[in-house]
Image (cartoon, rainbow, N blue to C red; front, side, top):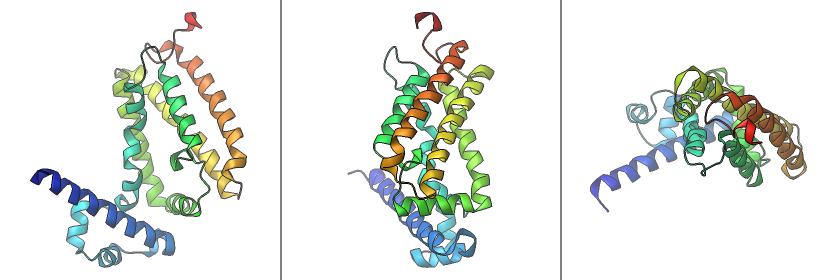
Length: 213
């Protein structure tokens, strides 16, 4: 293994380890009740070292979902020939429901529920989530060709994913089981993404041509 590859692996492990420790503390005590100094001490590193990896306290949490920022963009860019943009995102979301991907909201694991309870319960984290969504929209809009039309389409696609996931999470939070909710979650995703695809027929390349359906 090259020296660069080894350094990158060590750096990635540091990100993962420190974030995991921080999230555990935040879930146990509350995001606002835990200081950065306490996280650094638990991770056995100095505060300056922690800040080199995570410039802000919120980054310790958002690191856990950072890879989802470009998820829709990657799915659309890698879709099969002839597959519509919305169709690709819908298929990916449905597959996530089937495997209980936490990002779909359909996961009743107590640890997952505790993480999202902490995430949505801290105003500063909720505020930072908007930046996460904006970057997701920007990445998808770029894949769709850029410009106003692409930005509008990307915003709608990202919003549908978010609202569907939030509805699933709310039901999990009320004590419903994922296996019991799955049927409703799949039906909702099929219905809403279907309507979205019809509405985005005006965007070149964003959906299957209406005349072909």
